[in-house]
Amino acid sequence: MTQDKSKILIVEDDADLRGTVALYLSDQGFDVVEAADGEGMARSLDDGVRIVLLDVNLPGEDGFSLARQLRTRSGVGIIMITGRTDLVDRVVGLEVGADDYIAKPFPLRELLARVKALLRRLQTPVMAAQTPPPDAVGAAPSPVIHFEGWSFNTQRQDLTAPDGRPVALTTMEFAILLCLASPPGRAVSRQELSEAAKGRDWSPLERSIDVHVGNLRRKLEADGRYPRLIKSVHGVGYCLAAETGDPA
Image 1 (cartoon, helix red, strand yellow):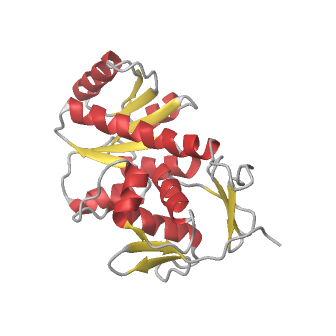
Image 2 (tube, one colour):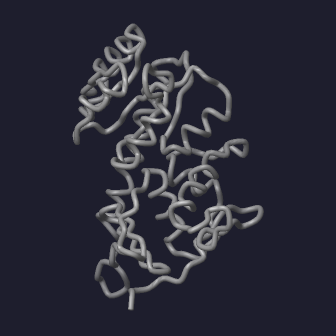
């Protein structure tokens, strides 16, 4: 049994399934709260919630709409729970900002593994940024990376646009941008991006990294269809094609 008391919010209208998952995760040491729909999610969501397990088919607003709204104001981890196995529905979940998905029916142990993996991803970038290696003269490098007018604070996980507007990043988008910017101009393989963002090996058949890169491009570019900053490198992956340095 894990001793992790991380708070998990389950949003699922099937009371039997919701209760089963809640009991299982509680037995594993997690602090679990439940909701049956979007209104219940809004009432139960607070700063202590680390992960939302969000069903797609809910009464009222569906899970995709709720995930999109949630992502605009929170960096909480989102795992979509879906009865659909169609690839398009899974891609839509990722595009609206979900970190992961799991299809019904699912083994509870698999759900637990996905929850633990997401918690590690939520924690790892912050820990890495808080303990930067010293440079050649013994001083810690700045946690802020500047590129093309953008300001990327790797310690606070903040991204600021050239016009001063804050831009929200999902956990995976932060990890991908951090990998591409360390240092920029380097071709980074999909496997390396997947390991950095998802904490597991990449499969050649898995294209979810491309979805997350596409989402990140749309946040960085005026037109994400014609990327100027995050370039595709044929046969390899991606690179951040931007000049870095302190703003003038």
